[in-house]
Image (cartoon, rainbow, N blue to C red):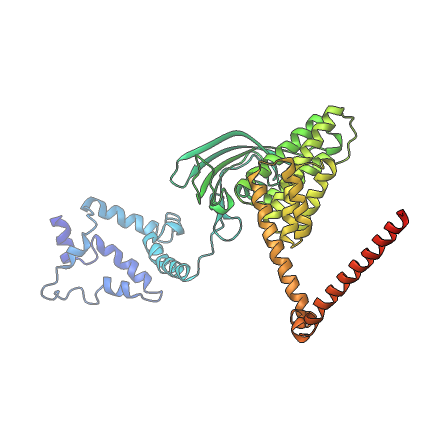
Length: 445
């Protein structure tokens, strides 16, 4: 290293001095600032104070004396050979990264300034069925590919698990069968199952108005209870053809609809109750292409009477008096002595103000069942209302005729003449009796 320094100090064109011709050759091209800094114009001048000597810059690469001459020869041979240069993409890689960094920051800034698009709804999100937040559905397990929704009128089978809002499970039905749209079940199921695929499992949260309402379902479901329903839709098949049902199948179908109506009636949901009773009557009275036995016909008739009576009770609760009167009349056509139909018909007529028609009907019902306190109370109430109605009508008639109750006061002399006329008629009768008696005595003599 010391020899290298001596050559550098005495001969500027020594080991690193061989680069000077390269700089000289480069001087034929436009000089660069880097080249002008690397070759001072006066190498013999002493360096300024504080600046290390020139040889310190020349040995930064750690080149030994033995390699100096070989490098000089290689540089002369490879003066114009650029084949050993690294590829373009490898040169100045840090510089390329520095050049790309401002663009990347700009792109990030622009991306941050642009509004993000709204994310697509995920399948696990809640679906607000009615738009009021009181009935929602979330898919837990989607149906298999190619599965479809059931439609109204199809008979579906579901696995139902019912829980309260606190997570307490209150009911489980592995095989619940019902017809969509027939109000066979609570509204939460009737409205959510048509939105499911066959094979799907969903969670449904429902307010009490779509479940069991203010009455609840004793003993498990309290009044005004919102429910969580885990529903698995197993199957969905077309409903039965009523014309092809046998007698027993008709009885079973009508009984199911009647029981659904009774459940709705107990929850004071009289609209749904009337709908279920109508469906039961339709199943009974529809035309049949299958022969039935006499016993099956009698059984269907008895069931029809029950449904008509219950339908009249629901219509009476809804103040549908004409429809209730028609239902009662249909019952009495089949069974004239049906006490329930007589009582409800009398009550409907009383609601319409027809007391004179309602009282005889209630008396006929009381004659069939004298110990019925309900009929007694209703009849007594109607008799009082009818008497009050007659008094009101009498007063109204008197007012329309000019108040005839004051007419005797306008003819005070009429009472004085009434007594002599009575005496006159009496005296005449006595006289005629005496004459007749004398004629009889004379005839005997």
